[in-house]
Image (cartoon, rainbow, N blue to C red; front, side):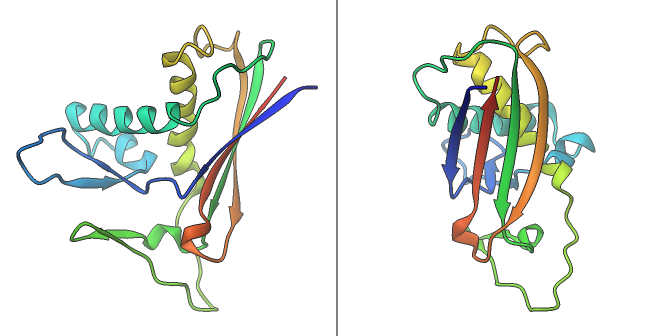
Length: 159
């Protein structure tokens, strides 16, 4: 069984809602819930997804060298209080959690990174398309890290 691991250290937490170069940009936290619950209009959604695709494509290897179909596992490394990360006045704000902190965010809201990764593979022509003929399984797993700067996305491609 062959596998490839693609890692993105300190992944972006927010994406621009618009691509207007003249106006100060508004940002949205990258989270599948915003797309799922229709909080974003289609233009903002397209900007967020384009931002994610561009980011993910930039870290892809030249060739995958795998046979299809492949299985993909997204391992989402983040602090337990990742749900509290905010963008304020252009800066990302994170405060280490107290010892008794109870998490209130869902890992399935981060599956949007998996969808964007599959799209990035297709857009960059690493795979012909992201149908089940080429990607037969996608799963997401959470791993806790102690510090916000240790966050990363790790994609394991297995065939």
